[in-house]
Length: 265
Image (cartoon, rainbow, N blue to C red; front, side, top):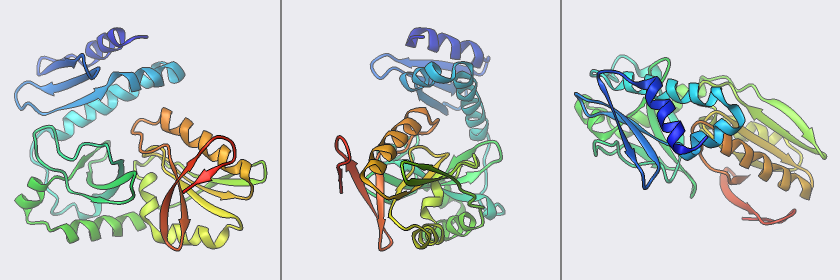
């Protein structure tokens, strides 16, 4: 599967009288947009092809679903007021766009050197990132968005599954509600795990649908975490970061694992 074939496959499945397709050869990206509003979604073909190598049809179906639901969410005016319980924070990489393709800045906060916190309105099958224009139109302030989103985040369950490898224990949160990585913002979860663990605590959010907490007991644990995080990062629909973090005294510090068993903050 190459870019030409993947582009053709996506265009065939997404074709509609109201849509047009714009291909950026230099960036190898395909944009699908509404002809009438100009609003649309851009996806990188190399990432989809990489997932296709592992997941085949599932990778294409997920991409089509993501684009279809995203376009639907853009239609019409959606209000924040009255839907306060549906506002949540979402974790994205620092390379994620700072503004919508229409040029309107998103509302986001710094998190770590690798990640940012964006805010979204959950719309059931998808969600829409909150931008500055939307906030101004409805009179929502920054602190109101933050407090509402974090309050809702704390109400979400955090059911981890554990797996022990070479004496190290890895805890996985993968509920697929779109906010697994966002749980890294819940201090209660992180501090509760910190008290439970007996070794060094490391945290990873390779993509939006997983949170990994590691109880590192030996040098091999760092190598395992690095390999695991990279694997999740490569297969996630919305990748965040392939780096892991040490969690100490309530702070997240990115760590680089150089070669075998050699962590460096």
